Amino acid sequence: MNNWQTEKIAELHRKDLINDSKRIHIEKPAKRAHTHRPSLVARTKFNLANWMIAKGKKLRGRHEVHTFSHVHQ
Image (cartoon, rainbow, N blue to C red; front, top):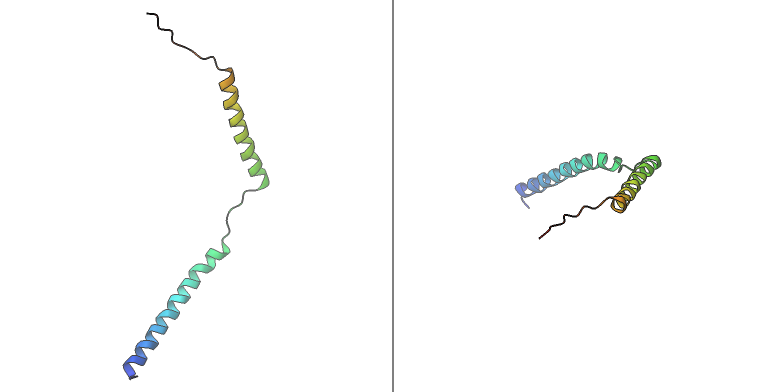
């Protein structure tokens, strides 16, 4: 190998090391961040609200007065 090839390989290794360090620098905060998990109270309120909406739709469908349009010919 001549001197040019050695310098080229050293430059490529240096760029790889810089890219790796940038990637690691970006990944560290991402690893520390965790997914949000709602508390027990928040989950219970959410489930209760969904249950009330479902029951309300069923009750409204059962107790609504249905109107029919009678067409006389």
